[in-house]
Length: 127
Length: 419
Image (spheres, rainbow over the protein chains, first blue to last red):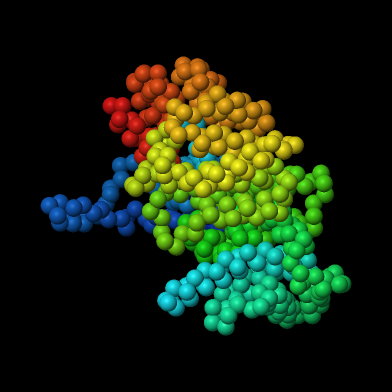
């Protein structure tokens, strides 16, 4: 079963962390990635660059128009995400709790829509 | 005479033969040398050699002996280079036969091979492994599939699957698991773990949607092939027979289970003419034979019996629902769980009416309130009772909790149909 772990954040929150602590966090994230890539449970780990580098694409009358932005009104935006392939929801929750950021920022755990399910093999009754 | 076609047929025949011999060769190798990880790698390399050489040079007179000889050579090479790398000459020691006299048993493939294959299944489905690790390792070591084939079947990258396989081997090493028979007290538990892994393999394939890639390995067929293997190894084990029967009777309905767009078609709406009668005949005979002689009635046998009742009925109305209900009640005592209770509630509705069925689902809200199937069943029962508003509400909730795309589409279609 595939799950997406999503962490929201912002530059302000990150800047408020003491630099030595930031270095420890980097090391902890590296260790987290290494451990779960090694088990085959982590399929990908990504984080966005600074919001200043973001562009917006719109299509108007068939023509793409590219502008800077978005100028976020929300204080927090999608900062990083992890794609997992695990045996159960329980396991996804365990891994989410291991994220070094979990101590100061909650992690969202989203099941991913999929073509195949492991838990619904036998047809049951009429359904 | 098309030589291209016969060449292709030869290639497929060789592939089948190799996959049948893979666990026997690995078993024979493990009997004489320690270390599942290096032995398994050596066998994979020997299989690869055979797959490239045999189509050109012809299948050797003793294919099993050929594979074992090549695998042994590969293993010794591996251990030597490992030893050189580590500057530890004594590692070669590991590659020397541990059982004197084992040499003579290589040629005859009989009872010893069957025991080896069973031991290999016990090892690959060791309780120290997570289910996905055990599945990956079993498909490689017993099923003889390559890592690339397994990865493609599970929709993950080859690198990820390679990690999973090597992680599984690591877990076996860490657990100190050996290629030896489990004790009598341990045996039942280990056999249960093997059955669960084979059922997972089957289910993974069975629930896949239509329109899959051509390269996708057919895990359903692989689950059945391994299920047959287990039943052949243990013909008197009733649950192994029940597991095989359940797979056959479930797979019989596969073609009718999804429409051309991949949307799910429930049992009630399936075109029963598309059910595979050959599989139904085989599965039904197997479950009848097993239930007549079983000394330990278990969940696979009962689920197979339920599947057989459905498969033998010409229509939903013709189904012997009283029999289904009795079997669910039995299942509920042998292997209780909320999903079993939900199945029983459906049978209750078909025998005693939708209101009785709804009442039977009442106590399950706590355990299954966030599961789409619970709401789908309740939606269906409300629809049976003519309460369209409540049915729509339940289908809507069910669609929200479903993460499987064909099921989600089916539920959304039901919702539209009520509208």
